[in-house]
Image 1 (cartoon, rainbow, N blue to C red):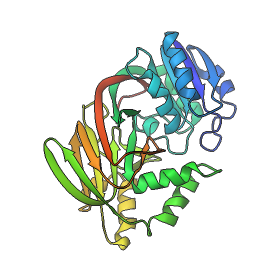
Image 2 (image 1 turned 120 degrees about the horizontal axis):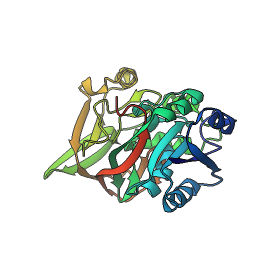
Image 3 (image 1 turned 60 degrees about the horizontal axis):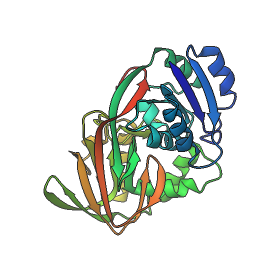
Length: 289
């Protein structure tokens, strides 16, 4: 088996530093490593790996790096793995990868290949958790920060969450139409944003469905309780949260900022989100939790 590590040297808070030596010491497979320099490099390098029939591409970075790699790997015979070095690492943690880099690299020696779903929003791929509303607002602000890391992400949430106003959305799915006023709507293929912030506790990345998590308008004093439930994987128990599982949804909104796997994106008023069943091979240790 041939593995190629694609390393994003500016992801997260620098956990990747010195990773080549750790890979060399603990990896049992034939491998090589390449580094990104600019946005889009991970997609280009992953496409080269696919063309060269590399068995596994390991994204060394966060969910943004995972997303870039996945864009080239979806639908191919190459599998995608992750060494979590970003600010959130939701995709990696959903599948049971360790937070410690050395332990995560050791896990690669016992990983197996399985096949999961991928998704699209207006035909743009995503594989973990995406959304519109407050989480997209935070992703947009976070992308402009010079200093990354989970603590800075939390600071943004703290600064913005009590002034953010819920937005109106019209949802169409399964022949139904529904209007909601929501703080956010997450499109979840997997379960968490990262760092155990679990927005879709029941999400299964291989069930052919997307979990649309609607966090409705609520009194501001209720917000800390919702955040606590997210951190404990129990947000689905809140009366302010509705989860719709479906394979496709169209969202109509004047709010034109979404995020795909944590990366902000401007879009049109109509957003079509679809699942693409069994289109991505993943190289992970235990399967889903």
